[in-house]
Amino acid sequence: MQTIELTRDCEAIQIPEGTKATLGKGAVVDITQTLGGTYTVRAGAGLYRIGAQDADALGFENEETTTATDGPVTPEAVTEVLKTCFDPEIPVNIVDLGLVYDTIVEPIDGGGSRVAVKMTLTAPGCGMGPTIAADAQGKILQLGGVEEADVEVVWDPPWHQSMITDEGRKVLGL
Figure: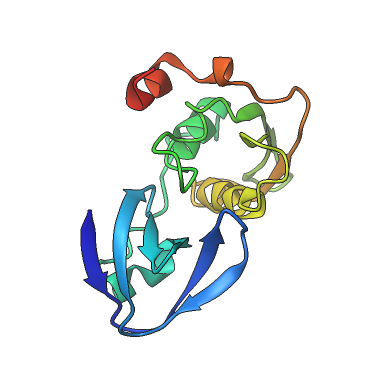
């Protein structure tokens, strides 16, 4: 765990509520997870997710980039980019957690692609759902050739631990 003093005010999302908060300049935070370009930090008694756009407040560089594709966008390319999207409390990407249920890629008139993803969460009512879905949408939009992306959170079928991939199980020690 790394302890850092914020160099400026930055936006954060409180975990697990999903409410927006501002962590002030000079706040001392412990970084508990740095995956997928986002940061999970403990500040006081709470956990917060800090996005890549505020990495500089932690003393890091923003590493967001557009992922180029060779040729048309494929469901496999979307899956790979979604493997860079993480639940802020679990060190496994949303694909290996078994949260991504369906990926559809359709060409758009005039070029480019539209991507639709259906995903779920590990628990109904998780306040981080909109944040995780927005993160997934943003990652898909970074994929070269994607013009539109829609990520829908669904609850059928309900998520169960058996949906975690072998790779996810290894990370979790299951």
